[in-house]
Length: 320
Image (cartoon, rainbow, N blue to C red; front, side, top):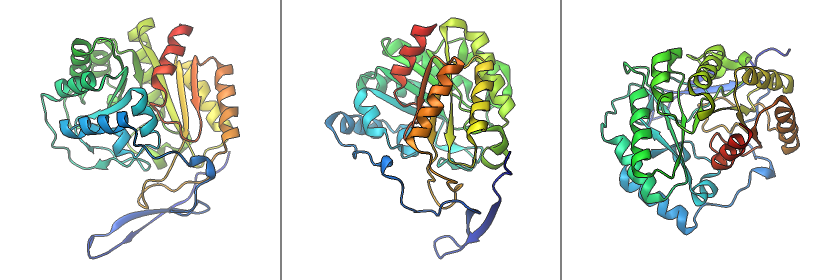
């Protein structure tokens, strides 16, 4: 097995940022701003449905991962009636090396947020709503009650909408997870993000084994009523064998749906891209994952956790 990428940090200072910015470099990694392969070209969003949904989100003062993470599929997903809402504010208590969500001490408290999200879901006519959040390790229940409130509100105001939750690991505590699963979301998603070897580099504050346990516990609590899902990125220095080993562990923890996509470096302050995986390599990973028994797999350079979420749920439900 290859050694972990060697990381080097330095600070840059400017008049706008006299304290200096954290800049990450890795030997052998691709330079920030280097030209991406041709397969990353996607049409710019802008059809009428996309514009209408964006106005609704902006007017309601809501956050979406689609916007926060600059997802390349935002136009396609919003046009198809799927959107991912980020609750509990836009400030995370953890600092993953790949994530573009800002970190710090959260101050967000909006008891009406679940209702506002549900009202927007109804107005937008969404068929599939994904609810995620920043990590809120500062809260007594780690944010579980907010997920409960959103699920209940959507069920009441938009009963035809499928609800998928993409939660943090709740620090491995069972009670917050049990509260969320008791509401029977259609899909419970928790992303492991990368292979175990790279956790110290990419997911400081998290543990691969803990994330797997959360997924297994969610399935045991939810049974056949809840589909379990997880996702990974490529491009941080992992190998094909490591990915396949990780897939195997996820299946052993009863994960039914898998997504695999290419990591894209948001800024110079984030982990660099070790390499771009070719679409043929993603096709190979998808075939291997199906052979392991996953009921639905989406693998490709532009695949993100919520990509074609409605279709993957339908596939998984058919295979139950």
